[in-house]
Structures are given as structure tokens and as C-alpha cells.
Length: 306
Ligand SMILES: [Zn+2]
Image (cartoon, rainbow, N blue to C red; front, side, top):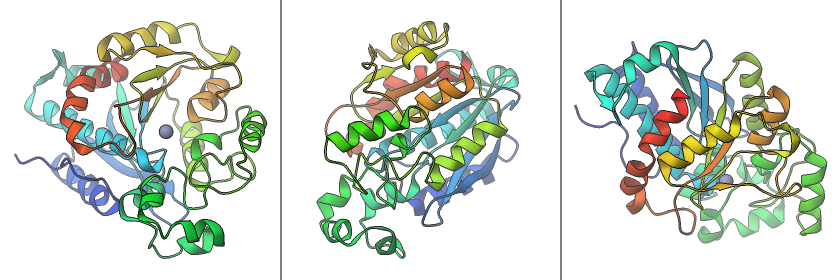
């Protein structure tokens, strides 16, 4: 069977097409849904695979220019679905057996508007209305758009969660980020953005065992958050590190807050990780994707199994 998810930039058109095709090809194995909509009305897709009793959440595409993580999520989803159908093992693990008792919920692009801006530019209906005049003027530059991280209001989703948000806002202000930007702005208040609210609501509905947020780049794993890190987080992080070769990192007390990982640990007292994939300048080149995927494949399976 021909592959559905291709190694191509995962803009909204392709993601929508691939997700629909995965649903059609594997109707017995995957449940396609959405967890809400972005500011510009794009669907924030979710793919549920396996037993949904206590699943793991994998989240990509939090930052626009890090869209290689969206491709990673969908490529992995197809890999797992294909292995289940054909009764193949991945890295010597029986995926059917594993998914009988373990579920995986994948959100390939939490920030589909940001991904779209980075891949296809700012020429999108409605975007000019949300961005101030200054920021909109910058968006005429294709290079400026390519490096876009925020959502369509110029809010950095990973600085918009209700976890020491004031601290992160103070850090942003100190570095001159006092309003909407391509990167780094916390938003007007915690959970001000529909994308943040969508995943907060999802975590309220589904009791996840743990959360893994994928970013790029840096080849490193963040696993702790202030005094909220559960005891088992370190062991789990070491498993992820051993299988990927990515070292563990501990940010200083103040450097990390208001992110999905931080918020999930504080709110649910359960492990959460941020994994920075790949090396180079974002957006990473698709040329490194096959290498990247082979390197991370075992970690992706283990992250859903532990
Ligand atoms: Zn990021």
C-alpha cells in the first residue's frame, strides 16, 4: 500500500487530506476527531489509537516554524496503524498487543495557523484583522513568515498556559516583548488563545498518563518543572533519552513556565516532557527527516508504552 503521509511540508491542506485518508484506510484502528479550532477557524485534529482508558498525549506543531514535528506525528501515526494492520513489530514491540492496554492520542498541529504562516506565508483570509498594523507590515517578508512561531494573534502558545504565567510575562517584558510578536509573547492573560483552551479542555476530558510535546530544534529532553515534577518523571525521561540519544536538560527555575509541559505537571501531578527534535535552523529541512525519524522511532513507541 502506498504511503499516505509524505515527506512534504505539512500545511493545512495536506494535513487535512492525510488525516482523512488515514481515517478511511484504517477505520477500525483510528478515530479521527478535532479538539477545537484555531483563531482562523482551522480544525485542530486529534487521532486516537488504541485503548483510550488512560492514554498518552503526543502534541506537535505548537510553534509554527517547528512544523517538522507535525510531520513526525502523522508519519508515526501511519507507521503504527500500518504495523497494527499488518501485524508487524516496531523496534521489536508488538503494536497490537501494546495498544490493547495503552492508548495514544495524537494532536499533530496544536497551532495550525502558525504552521500555515511558516509554510505558506501570511496571505490568508482574516489574518490581517488579528495582527496589528506593525506586525502585519513585517509579514510581507516571506523570510519573516518562515520563522513565525506564534498563533494568528502573535501569541506564543507555549507561553500562554496557566503555570507561573506572570513570571514568563515578566521575562518577556524584560526582553522587550510587550505585545504580539512572531515569537515570545505570552498573550494578554493565561489561556487567552483558542488553541491553548482546546488542549486545556482536552486534558480536562481525558485523563492522560503523561504528555509529550514535540518542538524543534536542539536534540534534548526537558522533563522537570519546579517542585511539581512527579518522582517517576526522571526514570521515564531516562528511557526516552536512552532510546533517542538525546540528553536530558533541566532549565533554571525561572527559565521555564507557562508551557504545556509545565501546566500539565502543575495541574495533574503527572509527568510531561518537551522533546526538541533535530538540529539546525528552524524550519528544519525535510532532507533530515528520514534520519530523524529512524533515530526517534523507538523513542516514539516507548513514549506511548511507559
Ligand atoms: Zn517550540
